[in-house]
Amino acid sequence: MTNAANVSILVVEDGQSQREMLQDFLREKGYETFEAGQGEAALDLLARNYVDLMLVDYKMPGMNGIELLERVKRINPEIDVIMMTAYGTVETAVQAMKAGAADYIAKPIDLDELLILIDRISERRTLQRENEILREELGRKGVTARDIIFKSGAMNGVINLAGRVADSRATVLVQGESGTGKELVARLIHALSPRCDRPMTVVNCAALPETLLESELFGHEKGAFTGASQRRIGRFEEADRGTLFLDEIGELSQAVQVKLLRFLQDREFQRIGDNRTLHSDVRVISATNRDLNALIREGTFREDLFYRLNVVAITLPPLRERKEDIPPLMDHFLRRFAAQNGRPVTGFSSEARDLLLKYDYPGNVRELENIIERAVVIARGTVISVRDLPFAAGERHPGQGEKKRPTGLNEAIEALEREMIQEAMNGSRNNQTQAALSLGISERTLRYKLKKYELK
Figure 1: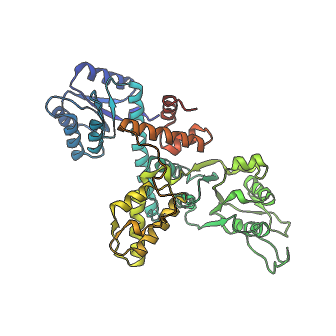
Figure 2: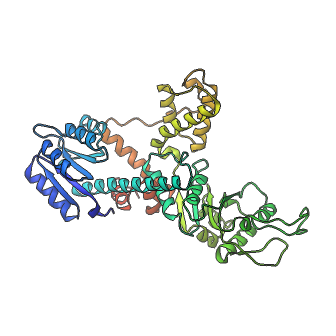
Figure 3: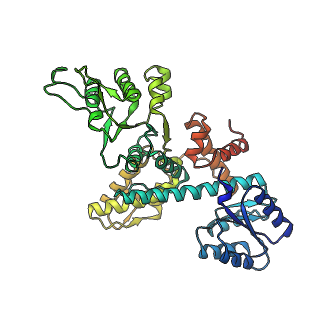
């Protein structure tokens, strides 16, 4: 839970008893609080005090809640506002969210729900501040952050965790479907680590047969096997004092797994054909798109190796579960490929943008990148249209087979929330810590939602 002592809250409510009740409740929970009975008084108070969050009543005499929200956002757009209303219509909620409200809550106020909203907003603010610091740190180290494009809370949590483990020696296991950006996260960790002045060495474990992979990792002596015409220095030796990224770790043979386990335990290894024990100071980051727990049950992956690799686990959600990241990624790829190919393409038609936002992207960010590159290259004008997108007539188009749309905003939000929580729990095998991280919410919030939606 967020440290309440670090959050200041202004309660704006014309009903004195309601205002005092909320202020007393929040003070008991450790929050610094201010109170105002109307909009003008709230603005006067903001001029003299720093406030993180405001609880604003929608219906007040004089300036109403929406008008106050708009004035507040002009003064300081970083102040978050929760709109309180007894008039919980869809129109009111939509109007508040369009005006910049972080969320809204209906009266009579459920105090547990209010705490969850405050906690969620505070955690998001903390993650955003920490990620800004990470970007500044990358800039100081001369590393561009141009490929770290995201908006979702889920990716906020992923990037934040990567930044927090970067300066340690811990091994990291990055999990996620193909194309979600696992190597990008590994490069971020390396760039923020004390080893950043050394290169990050990348080995794709699925790209080489067993004998060649063992030689690639650990090296060999001349004559160690047929074709070994000279000594080869392996990647563990080569990456001394740096970072070794092992992609597709689930493809390792049993023999290579044994040697990797020994290295992770003792930091020792031997070249093929040599009895001498060598040492190397290497930080290992591995990645997989496979279910290592299932491979352990099948007997094809060592459980002891899994625990050595999985000291810190970072799970990247698929793009279909973080669709708010699609628009900034689309615009980023368009600018990059237009510049690379000398094309005057500057945007998307509304129909093309709608189609791209609805698509599920089984190939994740990599597929989106390829779609935009192709569209930029073949576009006939300055705008990408539907005819420039590679959805063939026989394919399942985005939106086909979709469920009936909910009729109200509350119903739509709850349906989406329920679906995302269920998918996160399935993806983490009911590990609430991992599920909460992938959703970008606290475990407390997750437990509340699981109970609310009666999810197992």
